[in-house]
Image 1 (cartoon, one colour):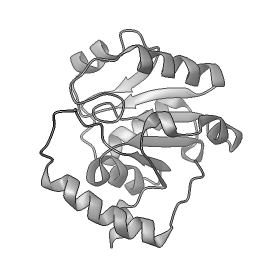
Image 2 (cartoon, rainbow, N blue to C red):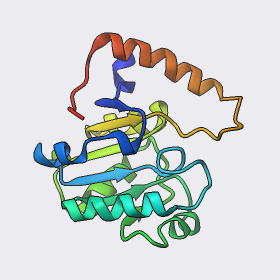
Image 3 (cartoon, helix red, strand yellow):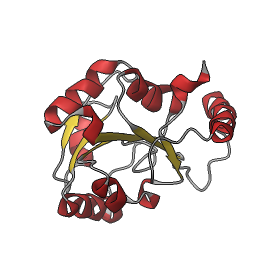
Amino acid sequence: MLKKFYPGAYSQSVFDIDYKKLYQNGVRGLIFDIDNTLVHHGDDSNDKVDNFFKELHKTGFKTILLSNNDKERIERFIQNIDTQYVCDANKPAVDGYLKAVELLELDKNKVIFIGDQMFVDIYGANKCSIPNIMVHFIEAPDEKKIGIKRYLEKLVLIFYKLSKSNSIDI
């Protein structure tokens, strides 16, 4: 029952993933969530994220953002990033994921989704059989309270780690 929430792999951050290894293993497209995956919720992009996307593109990856945010938020975020996006995605519904794959013009098995929410991002990717990596959500330094969903994610992550069910080598 819990396996539908298990990620293909888990990483502390998008910056800790070995993208060269993913590319060597045939991955050509990356679908990213924005809030708490690339930046803290609601923040604009920054130099680190902008340069990160430049490096991904230099490696040969196609990228796209998949977000439940509206068009205005995403266009503000990608001001210095050359990438496509799907807004108002209604994750975990599968339509947005499938639209992102279609826009990348790649087969699902050549794409990886990367997000921070197990019950939204990862579950949605799993529902449409898109390989995925869950990253630890970005916390603000002064943030002390997290929602109940994050505690439930921690519990499911314990079972995931015990199962050793990584399907993606990162």
